[in-house]
Image 1 (cartoon, one colour):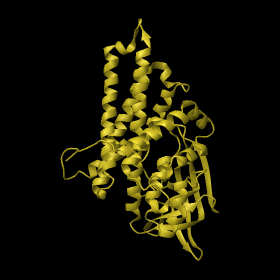
Image 2 (cartoon, rainbow, N blue to C red):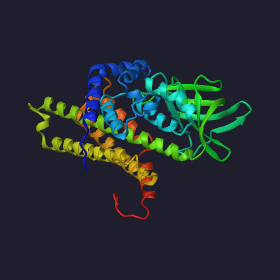
Image 3 (cartoon, one colour):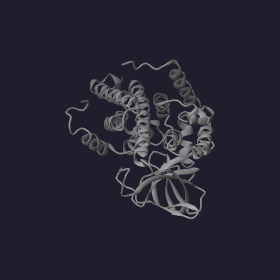
Image 4 (tube, one colour):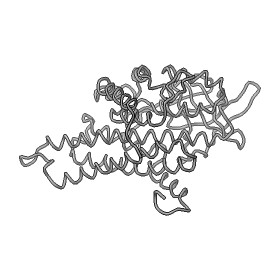
Amino acid sequence: MDFDFSDDQEQLRDAVRRWVDKGHGFEQHRAIVQAGGDSRAVWQALADLGLTGLAVPEAHGGMGWGATEAMVVMEELGRGLMLAPYAAGALVAPTLLSAAPEAVQAEWLPRIASGEARVVLAHQERAARYRLDKVDTTATRTAEGWQLSGTKSLVPVGDVADAFIVSARAGDTLGLWLVERAAAGVTTRGYLTQDGGRAAEVQFDAAAATLLTDTDALAVLEHAADVGTAALCAEAVGAMDFLVKLTADYMNTRKQFGVAIASFQALRHRLADCKMQLELGRSMSYLATLRLGDTPDVRRRAVSQAKVQLGQSMRFVGQQCVQLHGGIGVTDEYVGSHYFKRLTCMEMQWGDTLHHLGEVSVRMQDTAGVFA
């Protein structure tokens, strides 16, 4: 199998990397965290690069590129410790809107592509335990249209987003609805997450909603979740890549007993183990991305396999690199600690390691071996 990237993909990687290196350094990152964990200026910069239209079809003003290009972008954003909800707003939302009526697509997809609107998925509920089909939010049809009532948790930039795609039940039928944040009956409570990002609790109280789909809505939601999980895996690869290199540089400059600690064999072995975990994570990230176009059973198993490996790799690399740094590794003034926090939070997003281990097990009842 050929894992080489095309010229266009390499140019895309270089463009994103140059922007990250020039316009999104550690000081900018800390400033965004101190300002509340979100920056419209960063989102506009992503839009100016054309990245917000990456997954939007050309017919609606986007680039119409695929999963591999998204993976390339996410790796570079992960390397730059990007806090903007890029995957949520530019990859997951267009995937969900692809199942919406054409009029809804025509209204929202061009605005997403231009960076004018941030539309994010609101699906997590307190008792769901990562299950996409565990939904207590209700949808009611009225003479004026649909109304939604319920509460969603950990919605990315939920208190400043322009609209939400919400999973809800109309009777026994699971569906997806679009609700604008400015609609009557919508209240939000924003907060900083542990990694410095921004999320919110969003409550809907008979909020006006537009139906996107109530036919195979779970399948659409699962597909979008897999897109988001694969993007998260790629972001984690970029973050781990940066942290491993940062640690190697530190070990080559930090001296103990008059010599660089990189000369100590035990520490070299620990860093080599980090590199091995990074490359295992990278290969599984590739697998998840390449399987996004397969049948649902194959896709879901591959994505869960990738998330299991990435969960293990993120925890190992984050903890080992912090320990190899010593006390400075956990200080807020040092960039490494922020990567550690980001990796720790990513392990919990879109289902933690144990959840996806269960998903892999369920899908391998009739086979033996992880890759059978």
